[in-house]
Length: 169
Length: 340
Image 1 (spheres, rainbow over the protein chains, first blue to last red):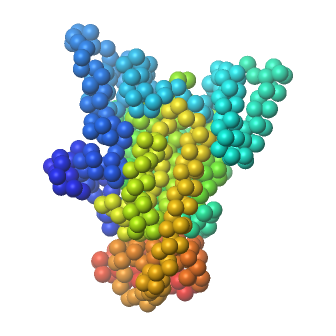
Image 2 (cartoon, rainbow over the protein chains, first blue to last red):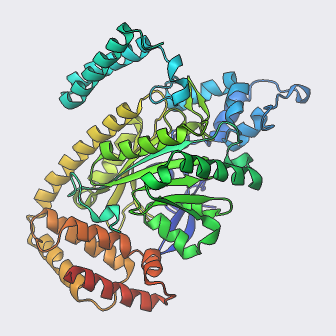
Image 3 (cartoon, each protein chain N blue to C red):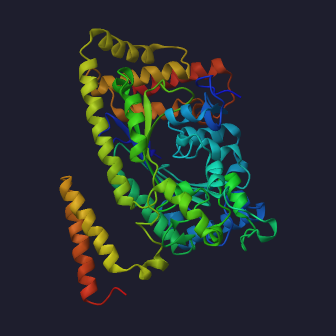
C-alpha cells in the first residue's frame, strides 16, 4: 500500500485518528510520518523499531536450543525484536545487555534521571543527586532562568542540610 | 461542573492547553501485549483498590468508566476531549478510564501501559499540570509497586518511553506561522532536539484550525524538570515568532475582514459543518489576540472548540442525529453560547 499523504512511497506507519467523529486509520511512509510528527527516532532512519532491534542482533548466531526465555512472561529476545515491544519488567533484566545498545541509540543516554518511586528513594546516592542538581543550577543561571535557579538553590541547601544532619542514608 | 477548558491560562493567545502524562506499569504483571483478560481485570482491580486506599477518588473526584460500557460515539468523544487517544479506544476490551468531574485529571487503564496518569491545564502551565499528575502518581505509588529500574527508570512496553515515562505536550494555535510556512520549518528543525511539532487532528500537514501539538520525545537521561524546561524554552520561542507573524499578517485589510466576517457567520449561520467551524473559530481566536474582537474571550472559544466537535456534540445532545441535523444543532448551539 502506498502512503496516503504523498502517494509515492510504500506505507510503513499506521496511524489511528479521529476524522469527523469517526475512528479511522491512515497509512504513511516513513518520510511523511516524520514530516507529520508521527515518526520516531527509528522511522527517521527509515527503519521500524523491530527491524532496528533485529539489525543489532542479525550478525550473531542464534542456535534454537540456546534460546533464552524470560522466566516471567516467556518472551524471547526475537519476540521483542520482531514486535518492538518488551514483554514485561523482567524482560529488561533478562535481556539487559542486548537491549542497552538499542536504548542508547534511541535515547542517547541510558541512565535514568528524575523521579524514583518512594520505595527506592533510599538507594539514591545524595552526592549524585547533589552533583546533578548543581549542574542543573549552572545551566539555569547560564540561561538566565533565575526563578528555576532560585528553586534549585533552595533544594540543594535543603539536601546539604539533611546530609549534615545524617538524615539521608 | 465547569470543565478545565472553560478557564483561561497563561499565554492563552497562542497556547491552548498544557498536558502532562506519566506512563506507569505494575511490576508484577506482563505489559499490555502479553496480557490476558484476567491480567487486565487484576490490574484494574489493583488500581481501583489503590485509588480507594490512597483517597484519590475523593481528592480528585474520580469516577471509573469501563470502555466496554461506552458507545462508539462516547469513546470518540473522549478522544476529542483529549482524555484518550485513538489507539486506546480502537481496542476497548478490558480498558477503562478514571476521570475527574472537571476532566482535568484522568488515568487510562490497560492502554499501551497499565496506567497513564494525565493532567490538563488551560494555557501554558506546566507547573500546575505536572503538580497534579505528580501528586496523583505519588499517591498511587504508596499502594502500587511500579516497574522501575535505577538505570532505565520506569519500565515501559515501548523502549521509547523509558526513564521518567513523562510525555509533556502543549496545544498551540499557530495561524500566522501556518500561513507563512514557519510551522513546517520549525517542525523539521525540532527532531534533532528530541521534540516534535505535529499538526493536530485529521489527515494532512495543515490542520483546519491551525492547531499544533508540541511534545517531548526523549524521556531517558533527562529529569522531568529538564524535559519540561526544554519544552518551555522552545514554546516561548515559537510563541514569540507566532506573535510577530500575527502582527504582520493582521495589517492586511483582507485578513481583518476575514476575521470579522468569521464571527458574523458563526453568529448567524443556520447550518455549520465541523470543517467550516474549525476555520471560523480559528479566525475568531486570532481576532481576539489582535484586539479586533473584544465581545468574547478565549474561554468561550475554547468551550466552543471542545463542545462543537462531532462526537462530543452528539453525546451532549443525548440524541442520534443525521449529518444535517447535527450541523443544524451545531449552528444553533454556537449562537446560544455566543449570545450568553
